[in-house]
Image (tube, rainbow, N blue to C red; front, side):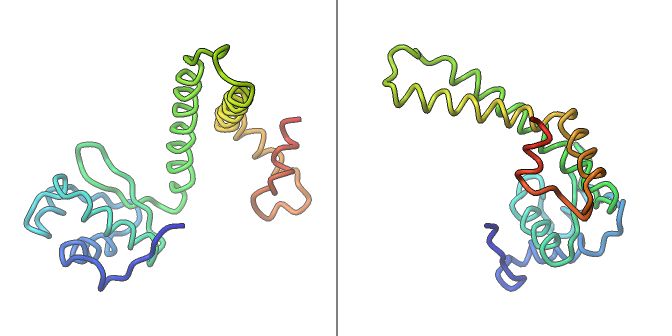
Length: 166
């Protein structure tokens, strides 16, 4: 669970950054140079301050930001949040699970105990499932199932989601 903190618990610099970014409009981009001028030191060298400000803006104002590489940060528009955040996270899951599978298969399987072999195989199975679920095709399948569902009021329950892949 994410630890919540209040403005009074933040450093003065993080509070100043929070004040500036919480005034941003949807779709607005602010460059690192301007953010640095707010605190009179580099935000790229003191990212923890910006991260604290961004975290509080998300918690208190439901604002989501994305890095614009080499430029600054952008406040995402409401319609950009889902696609931007989920595509990045799903890609990270696919790549991380693929790398973990490659590492796990480097083990000398025959030298493992029966329990270790079982844990090895279970890990590979879970990582394979995560990789498969995080694909664009899976997103399409689940989206279609949600559109077909009688309740169509939100995310599918876990068992209904798993049933899509049977």
